[in-house]
Length: 133
Image (cartoon, rainbow, N blue to C red):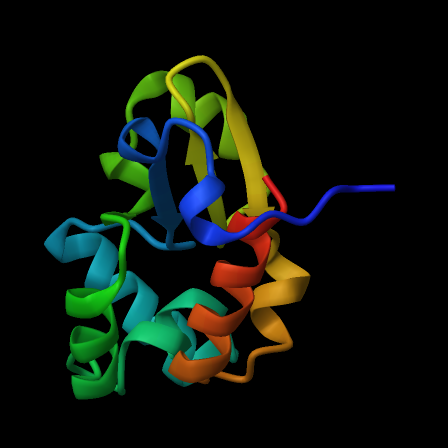
């Protein structure tokens, strides 16, 4: 049975890094390619749907990010360090934690898809997952 702990009991809280990896490239060409695929090929990045409207970052997302206890690093496929890129290959979009020694998958593609673009559900699920670490 997995022990559930309170947020203030999470070990190495200050060393915990959380990466949210989009299933898209961050370059200008990558952004254009993503938009074209979304509009014409029904391609979708569920993490993009959580954090962004069609063209801009959601205001609620910005608000929740600013008050979240941990720093979330939002990365596109081509912005990841090599070791993170190797870990997330074939898993994006996803949320990954790093406690200085190893990466852990916090939320996978299917879990993010089930959020249906909801910022509130994203942070609720993320908080729950972090308490289980």
